[in-house]
Image (cartoon, rainbow, N blue to C red; front, top):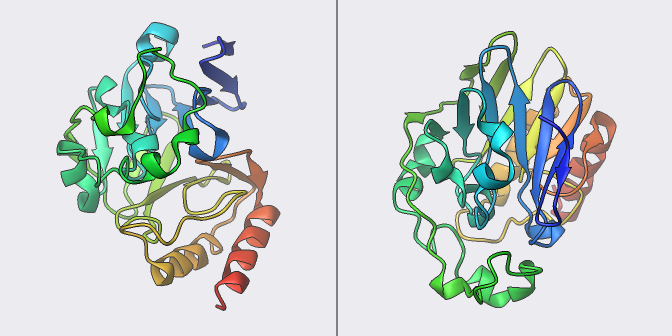
Length: 244
């Protein structure tokens, strides 16, 4: 693949066979990163964004090899485009939402009605309204348990069950490169821990688990990447703010 930016979809090369897709029509805090990890045999896609613009139309090279897509959790900004992929994995606790992605379950409502500015512009130009948006069903073709390894050929990604932001939230870790994909568990912004399905106690415990990992590079679900030192700082700050 080659870097790409048409003002709607951006594909960035993060080196070592890792790419980030961003949907520029959403503001950064509501722009769920789509991470792509290339192995020798197949390609891993972590999350699928809002899905308001078909990726195959903008990034056909993404689909030029076998893909396994995994949902870190089932909020609208992470699963809207999951139906575009034939192989779809998720933690068992969130599989029912993939099969029936209701507006409340995916938090389209009430979130997007309360924060309509989350969508910077309507990429389809059809007068987007949250109440009329229904994410296509994308039933899981497989389930992911804690500690399960996704083999890509020449590289292995470990799935970690890290509840707190949502019951079945997953993080992903590549030990050989010391790369962590914490998705919505930690990033350079406000961690949402007061939404339906969130649990602060679980979140604190999941943070403690991340601190046991040898991490050099952190590629989150929102905002810019950072290093392992910053990971610890962000977690410490969150713990302090929550009196833990």
